[in-house]
Length: 334
Ligand code: 8YV
Image 1 (cartoon, helix red, strand yellow):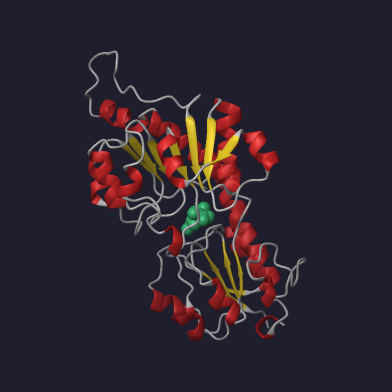
Image 2 (image 1 turned 90 degrees about the vertical axis):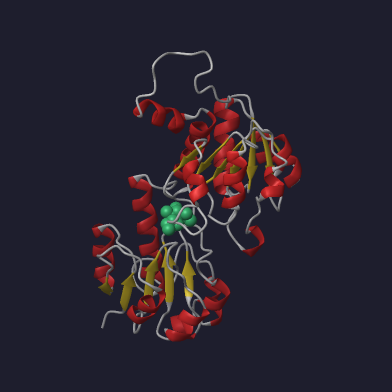
């Protein structure tokens, strides 16, 4: 008998068809996120869960779903999954790194440019019919080329953004990360490590790409925003909760920084009301990885992982991007 799996989000039909070659598949065709109790109820008897960033996999869920053997996410960020608890329960976890790096970096750069050059703010003005004449400082923003790019979190996506800035736009790159880059990569990017406070003080355009964890909760709040130049911009494509949205809305309202570009929000899809009423912010609905080819690659990678984790397909027993491969071969997955 085929193992059964739950696909907790609406995903491309090609991907579901592939999963059906190996599994009995229950899908979420309504495309609405199930409340936690319903997710747990639907996971009863399922060997695998195909998820994204919106489903919470915690110790209580694992205890309530003893048949679960693999949790495969089509997102790179996995702050919604308690990986140590999964490991303790012998449940394999995978995420979807690499396939979205360049697409997400494209978007981060685009959002930073739209923020610096006030693209949506000026479009709203035009759409409101307020454009009556050219004037010398109409929506004058700040330059991107030649400016100092500050990258907070220098992982794969941070480096891809830095590369765009340094090689494409002649930007000076400063970064802050727990670990320093390999000197050869620093040289290629012309990137210099600075502490967080200096990064905030020096940068013209800050781009936030750190993973979310308890340690990065409100990494940027009122005190950090106060260090930034009044001409600086802040772009967040990482996770809601890294920036204190209430403090950011206040800083934008007071023009303590010039502008912000936000793809992620605390408590999304809700957005802090203060951010909806200030003009100097570009807001997008968590779409940094959303090019069709990339979303397909992310979805297929999650399927590759699930198929392999549950002992099927060409990678049988070797899920390509497992986060806790140490559970392979243990009781639940043997
Ligand atoms: C996803 C992301 O779209 O991969 C991630 O970590 O943030 C995005 O690419 C999002 O997680 C979907 O929930």
